[in-house]
Image (tube, rainbow, N blue to C red; front, side):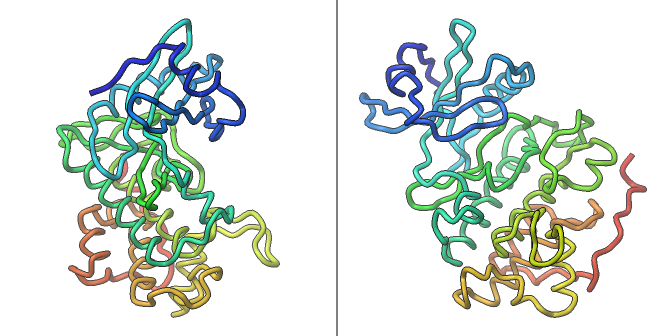
Length: 309
């Protein structure tokens, strides 16, 4: 159950929100590390910036949605504080920080085995959100910086500020455009509709980032200006050069069968047409080699928008 913290308590455990305890800057405020003596645990305290109207709305949605969720691959919300105009969320502390700091910023290499497991962890978090609760929860902002790693490098999906509850029957939710460029499905850009399929698209992009060590939009790529990851991977796949996709930092230390599987699942999920993407349940079966690899065209298809009204 959720715990209500006082402002004094949270100030004390973070040494008065001392810069040395700052873990990062989010879109809507800062995150600080704290230590709870009574339970001998570290926590992460997210301080919502007062200036952010959007932040306040997201705070409410986050508390409402996350407080109902419990899954080993979701960052656990421990409590909150709402006092003297301050809004704070208290989470379990994730010792290894966010996935992007490892994959892109060189914090550690992350072996192939760990990477493959992270993708499966993320898939099981999504299965829980999409299929296993009373409501379907659309996360709407799946990206490497929202995937947190605990002390054993288990992955947990965090940051539910943009999440929405939908009835299982309805599925599509017209909302203000939300999410992050590079991870956003093409139909979201054109229609503003979020769906399970658009979450699956973002998951696919993350899977390809984990396999390749490249960002969804790589600003400086070799000789050319920018690289768009999905078309580049699709082209390499079409030219039967799957091994070229693997993160070079791994050298040859990866499982080629799993690489092929991860790349094909990533492309399947990031298919331009939303109705041709798999469900997260299908993804898990393929990643576990319990179902055959998907049939993919040799070149990236043109999206079909006709069926998104």
